[in-house]
Amino acid sequence: EVVVLRLGHRPGRDDRMTTHIGLTARALGADRVLFVGDANQSARTVRDITDRFGGPFSAEVIEAYRPLIRDWEGSVVHLTMYGERVEDVEGEIRTAHAEEPLLIVVGSEKVPFEVYEHADWNVGVTNQPHSEVAALAVFLDRLFEGRELDREWEDADREVIPKAVGKRVVEAESGPPDDAPGDATPDSTDE
Ligand code: SAM
Image 1 (cartoon, rainbow, N blue to C red):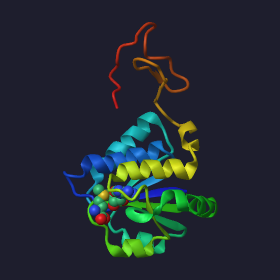
Image 2: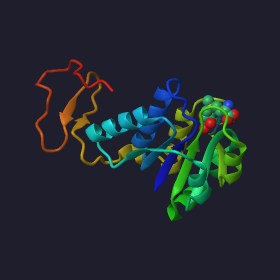
Image 3: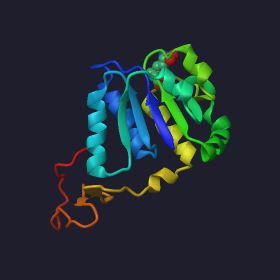
Image 4: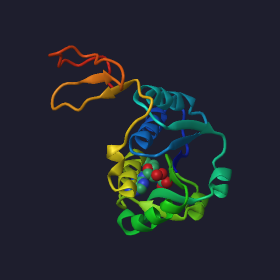
């Protein structure tokens, strides 16, 4: 199991970023995302996307992250620009993940030092400052060695059919396609 924990949600300011952490976690192979604090709107958005585009994936809001990190039965990776180079530690982390659940922690503003101390690995995706969404995406792709790109989705209402130009969305599995022949114009599904 791979669980993403997003620390330090600031309502209003962080809403889109927190939602994007959830959507990125889902799209790139994690099983769950946990938001801390007042992030119900982001959790609802991620659940709504999961209902439409498939899962399994869950988004939850938790009150306190300290007990979660402290009592996590598995390994903890904290993504930080100050950490060890992802290319140096990804192998060890993959080996650990084969044995036990992995908690991936990302921050927003300053992350308390105790998170650095509790992490089994503090991992930098480069040692340059960028974004928690970018760090998570690259880390998951490294962890799964690209296999997450081929994942099958269950219980989706709709599925995007890859297209060189235009947008094609069909009802998933049983349903008929909702684009008429020759219809290459954008439809209403614009995620
Ligand atoms: N200045 C904050 C600090 O010192 O903790 C971090 C701000 S950064 C915008 C927010 C989050 O993005 C970090 O907590 C970290 O999870 C992630 N992040 C940013 N750059 C990163 C990098 N190069 N490698 C890994 N994670 C990174």
